[in-house]
Length: 453
Image (tube, rainbow, N blue to C red; front, side, top):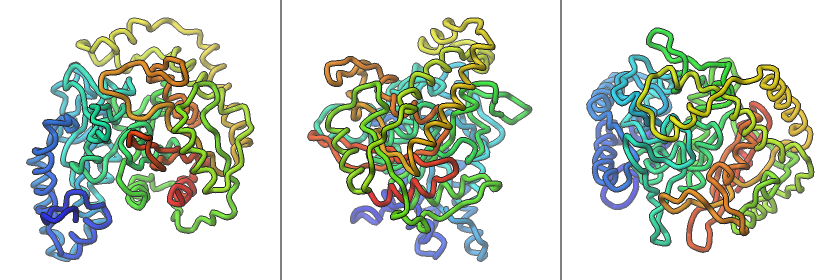
């Protein structure tokens, strides 16, 4: 429990599930505490854009009834969770932050959402995202700006993006667990901005279906494997503790992939490398110092390879040849950023595109040969930025948000798993996270290393 008022707001998923299952508290009471907290905090933060109150109340009542009958209700029993508004939720509006989908109510859950519900978690709402997740700063024409709940220096700040609504909801206690999506850093960067833990899983670890944009197939929304978005974007958890990250990732993990407990990892046997950035974009000196400190704790050796420095450029090159057909086919009414992106679309040289994907395969192979078992590096070049700011000075160089996320994008293009954990604060009190990148299907290794930090 958090505080002295008897509220369950701020409690972690393990504590809530244990208490609900053991009869210490009802799922309905836990839910009531969080719905009241949403009503108190959300007007200021604008993190939750659709509250699923009626559906959540029914789910909590049903869970309490099942517990009363002695049924096994799952490892997340009674845990309130929120979902980024890019991910389909049955019976709950899902807009992708776009007027084109303003009244869209899916009939079928994304598989990741269905897994959470099956584990006993209770959906309380959908969280803000830039339109179709196409920005690292969370605002759109439909719902406006989301505000970071952390303000140690008194400056209103962004929670990052594109899973910025999720980050603000969890960091403020409105939600216990969040499902975000990560393309170019969208669960890692917001976690860094708000002091949370997050996981970008290996591509394929979590069923990717149910994300907008996608391919409509009856009531289902399927991933389009012919797009960069469909190939590289993942669904991943955002939480306040690493224990919760491991618990939720296990729930989300597709059954065909073996799950290994992070507690079984022998850290003394790992070859750990570290880098002060991806190699082409400057990083704030306070962030570099925090990463260096984390590396020292792990006895990491400097990363000396060349592949990492190519990742951000390749991410941008692949992005530049996307036609965004899945978005265009959704209709009209897009905001200026998406409209401009669609207007910039052009015919592409298929041979050139195939060469880029071939280059990606070669880059992954080389990076795996250079990084050892684990690679430690920054999440971003900057801490949480002031609300509304679009350009950021780092070492005398002006960076866009995309450039500031170069270290995330360099990892995204490889499809490797990455865990973000806070390791310090700036002089003004803003959190600093680091990425712990592991080899494919080794999320348990990344979680174990992150726990050491």
